[in-house]
Length: 86
Image 1: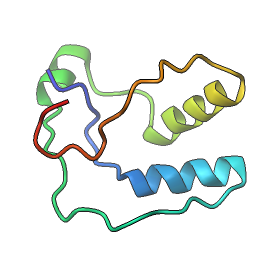
Image 2 (image 1 turned 90 degrees about the vertical axis):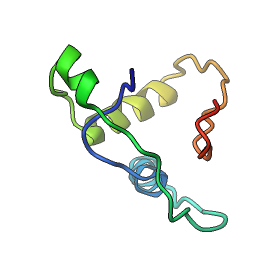
Image 3 (image 1 turned 90 degrees about the horizontal axis):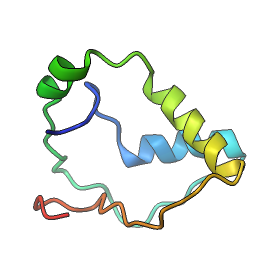
């Protein structure tokens, strides 16, 4: 099951929001791919209901977690993966 929200959010968007929260300007290398990951939140929403927490709130909670010394599993995100192999 694809656990995702109903909206599409780019890495650039998240980086810019995080940058604003921590007072830094993100830098980017290269250009975004014209292909985006395909996601369908239908089964997730059917199973768990429509998300009650906004994307910006999730980003805020994540930044607060990191700033407070929250645990990081050190796992790669593979955000650049386009072939479905994680």
